[in-house]
Amino acid sequence: MQPGIQAYAKTQSLALSQRELEARALLKAAAKLQALKENWDPSISAIEDALSHNRKVWTLFLAAATDEECTLPPEARQNIIGLARFVVNQCMRVLFNPEPEKLGLLIEINQHIAAGLRGSATPESDAQALAAAAS
Image 1 (spheres, rainbow, N blue to C red):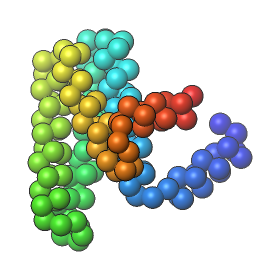
Image 2: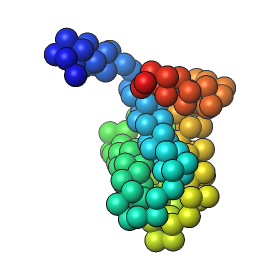
Image 3: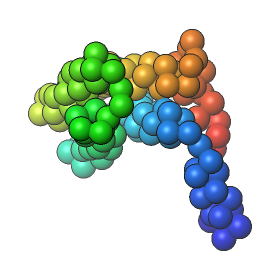
């Protein structure tokens, strides 16, 4: 990437809201999972790359929700904690018993949460927008 483009990309990411950054992280993880699902490669390295990325994103959400300084209402915190635990466990289930069909639920969760963070009604439009922006 050219230095000017790198500087622009860095400035753009600094200007994004926290919610938009979180939505983009979820959509990137969903895109990796979708690519794996569409081009299924049962090798552990291919599976681990996409699942590891998704686990990292959700582990960050879990850490933020369990932080003492988290300002979210208790019910929202509990919901995030429960969902993050479910997603991490589901990633491990797929890793130990790899089947491409099992990725659909993880993709759907990421897309719906990203849509909610963006205030969108349709998660598919967010995923398509991210794919268009990435190309």
